[in-house]
Amino acid sequence: MSRIDFQNVCKRYSPELPLTINNANLTIEQGEFCVFVGPSGCGKSTLLRMVAGLEDITSGDLLIEDQRVNDLPPAKRGVAMVFQSYALYPHMTVGENMAFGLRVLGSDKTEIDRKVKAAADILQLTPLLDRLPKALSGGQRQRVAIGRAIVKEPKLFLFDEPLSNLDAALRVQTRLEIAKLHKDMNSASMIYVTHDQVEAMTLANKIVLLHTGALIQERGSVAQVGSPMNLYHRPVSLFAAEFIGSPKMNLLHGHLVDAQEGYATVKVGEQLIKAAVDARHLKAGEQVQLGIRPEHIPLTSSGAGSNVAGHLQHIERLGDSSLLYVQMGEGQAVTTVKVEGSAIISAGTSLNLCMLPDQLHLFDSHGMACQRTVELPN
Ligand code: ADP
Ligand code: MG
Image (cartoon, rainbow, N blue to C red):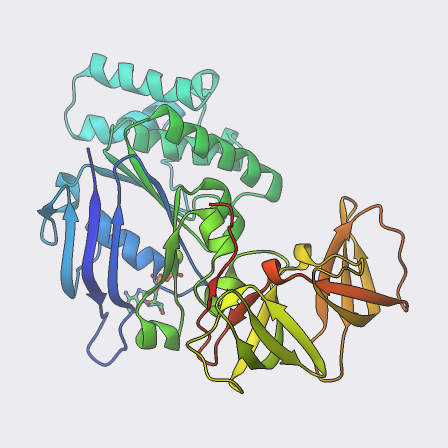
């Protein structure tokens, strides 16, 4: 029903300002749950508001179903938007708040009642239809705001950080409800904006990661587009590698010694480390960074990887897991290692960190990733 294409879209708020959106090219397929994610100020809301028709497009084309909509008014786009602040009318009941938009459009009363009832069912708001907003929790109010969007029966739902005002437990619960809503509305597409990589990973079919600051001007707004697992396993740049994953990917500075078809050898301090990547396009001696996620470093010595000695400085116990902060060689940043919560280990001890070639990423001096040469999950 509703495919969205951004073609070379740029946005400049005023002539003396740099581009807020630089050359965005992307396609959101019908029925997809697409998440725009990136640090604060990277232009997520701007991009979303362009789809809604609330923001002018400086150059480039925005297509909905192959039709150029740059100049189409918001009401004609078949979209409904849910914001961070739910802004319900305080003197209207839940039911009246949900019905209001349709009433303004002059819809038939029985039709309005049917749509409100259906939306209330989906969102489990039926017992609350006669309450005023002040008698609702934050999560319930946000559900009413989502209900207001559902009754419009849009082709496309737009969410701008809808969970940011909720506490941690409610955020998780409402996140599940939004995922379920997407399933229940099987043909509607959703675009969801968040700065939270966990929300992006858990909700999206497609993640659009946006650059921030100088990277917007240098490389364009879009840093990477892909499935959650694609961004996790195959970040195309340091920026993407560091944004996705918590705790962050570890980075080890070194230089390239040798590059073969299936692997490269990097010297980090005095240590040679092999990574299963194709770095043949780089020059020997180039400054590079090896990346490895905290959850991918076994502490057992193994012939399959490079064994690096480290000193455990500090340990954080999270219950299900523990985070170890390990100093390897002189001048290297502290490496984070994630282990089982039951692991018996104490600060001050010496450890062996096993760097497995298949778990390593390699970034060149411009921060671009080399192709990994192992078979990875999608
Ligand atoms: P995000 O939603 O990713 O936090 P925004 O899209 O709100 O980012 O903003 C992106 C950039 O554009 C920010 O630097 C912001 O200051 C700027 N910006 C947003 N709206 C305006 C505006 N109306 N006029 C000028 N600059 C703006
Ligand atoms: Mg925003």
